Length: 387
Ligand SMILES: [Zn+2]
Image (cartoon, rainbow, N blue to C red; front, side, top):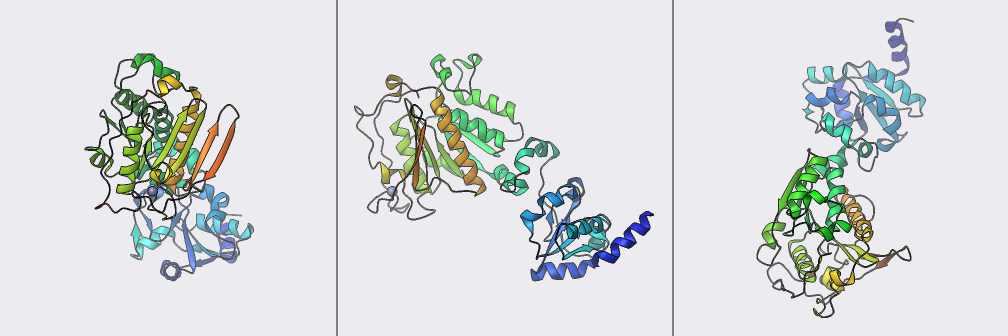
């Protein structure tokens, strides 16, 4: 059979529609339009309202975007590949599949609305290939991560794994604030650093390490200590704040500023063989608590255990930090069930993970306050301990 005969035969089984008809159907919401051209072909534009699935993935991914009862319009460059693909989808049990006659060339020639799709550079497509395969992430989610801004307070045992995994995941802007330098006793758990980093500023060493792993994102190093005077300015513009701190003073400051500024606070803490993870974002749902609902006031300094005295199993902040990074990525993508209104309690010796519900305190004067009557940031005097 010649190529011409092959396409003539396909045209007897697959209906073709004109671009103007396709636009009407898509505008009415009765049909779904898919651009099945290759990634490099859509760089110069696609039909408005079209969803891009490259031809190679069409059969594998169509069920994530359309049901068998949907009317599906396939578009390629000239209307030939879409004929073959439409026939294939019919074989798969999608009876109502049509091909856009003349493809995107005809769409443009008819002067119909086009748009410039956002895509990832080919280098990013390779880097995030395992994300792009999953419908819960896909191109859309990866672009969300790329547009996200995350600030990690504390570049220590918790901050290390969180930063490494968020940088690897492609969070577009990742900032770290810390004023410490790398010490030998840090290397037991702060996996960001090597012996070459000893005596160097943690945020500078982190910047080098993270940028070396992912040059496609922006890393911001802030060599400062967070305080009541600078916290709002530093937090401004971030989508999520990660609490990887080692002292109650900063922990309460982060909690209060996040509540006031309405920024989600991804919380993690460790003590010897135990850890806690949660998310506090009281404004997203009135019934979920803030940190102060749970712990209204910091413990007195004599009761606040010093980590340098109590000790911590080095791998425990690694486990807790990885869970914090997981919650952060989920939050940024808007998938799954976040730990809102729950705290995950981990015991490494028993190897137990308990997800416990926590409730908002109706009397809490922090999350029930507006920004105008918000209490002053409380400077809690507590010995900073090197986590
Ligand atoms: Zn509260």
